[in-house]
Every structure is written in C-alpha cells, then in structure tokens.
Image (cartoon, rainbow, N blue to C red):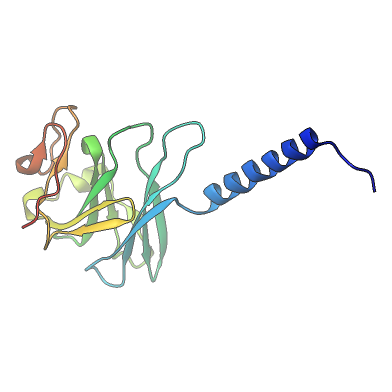
Length: 175
C-alpha cells in the first residue's frame, strides 16, 4: 500500500469534513420551533437553515393531513430572527417576521395548504386575528405567556397589527 504524506492526508480530511457539514446543513435545519396549530391537525415549523456564504434563510413550513407547504422567508437580514404567528377568522395562518414581512397560509384547504393571495389578505381584518405566539430558533413563546410585539428594526411601519409594532426591537415580556 502506498503511503501519502501528512499534508495531503490533512487536506483530504479537511475536504471530507467540509463536505459532510455541507451535506448535513443542506438536509436539516440548524434550528426549528414546532407549533401545534389550533386549526385542524396542522403543525407549523419555523426553521433556520445555515447559510455558508450568506446569512441563514428562515422558512415557515406547515404540515397538514393534506400535504406540506414551505415558504422561504427572509435572508440576509441580520437582526430579524423571530416570527409572530396568528390565526385569522378565516382560519388562515399569518406569519409576521422581522421588519414586517408577512406570509399568509390557508391551512384548512382540502386540496392542501396554499399561500393566500394579496387580494384575499386585504379582505381580512387584522384586529380580529388571534395572536398565537412567536418563534425564535428552537423556542416557541406562547401568547398565553408572552405579550405580542412586532419588531420593525427601523424600517417604518406596515399595515398589520399597528398597535403592537415596535420601531426597533422587542423584549420578551411575560404576561
């Protein structure tokens, strides 16, 4: 058997280590908060995925008996690491992320979860939404334990949940 030198062996070990980390981070989220939703048998997963050359993207995934829908949220947005979740009177799931990014998912659709269109969103009254809580990393902070707050990080305001908007960041405040 032919021997290889120390430098090539170390280089090969480094490449194999990098490749295994890359594969792991491509297949599984680095953090995931799992929430049982009050709408049927739906489960929401707020996932953080590692980024090798950019900040980690955040994904909201909804699993129902009729299928799964995943929506990539924001990336490259330093301090925005949480999402508030709401239930609308239409039984939609609303996610409001840092700086006011909004995603609305119909989790009760018989044909499977679907993204709600902007024209449909404009027909719902946000003052009738029920705050479920918010997620950060692997943690879920229930509305029964924590107050609602929407972090804007200095981006101004947006049309939903105005009375709960904070110009910059929110601190977790227990009820």
